[in-house]
Image 1 (tube, each protein chain N blue to C red):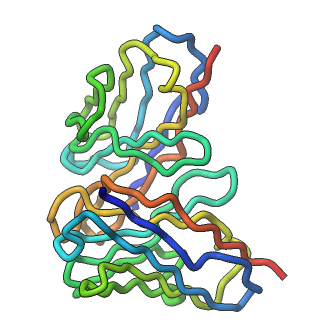
Image 2 (image 1 turned 60 degrees about the vertical axis):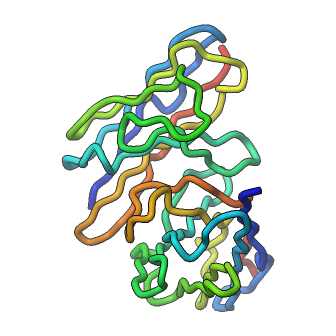
Length: 110
Length: 122
């Protein structure tokens, strides 16, 4: 079973700053099978990035994803007030079919 | 408008049963695999189950295998989760979500409902 470990647990930044979130997998993950979600308090998750680097519909271009193998990164180039939230990475493993989430990174206002 | 609306949550005693529903609108429901994901209070997201577009294949997390059953009615655009032998650790908000591609086993999920709360307590 592939385990996803996100770091840091909490990121304290100011609006306008750059945020770099890490997602490390215990085994190699196909880039096609790595996604990132944003979740705000009391709301459902929202898909940001799929296929490691493709933005979902309507996602601003300040959000970008990168990485391969076991190391993936979500970057928010300039934080907007609405970007303070919890971010989860998620992967799909085909053998056996299984979907797993990282434990999340909270981006909070400094 | 694309929408997923969950219902059926509530308070149930340990060992009890509950059936969740997820009504879809504004999407070609029968074309997409669907999933249930849960979130315990103050915790992260946990994948629960996936069902393919036809309903012919289902997949479960080890934590619910043998106790939960996912199903769908494509004529009614509705997804279900039958939960039996409920435990305190099943307490969570349960979300339904739509596969982001028409793949039988989509790697991600792009449309989510607002969730329904399930509380297992005596």
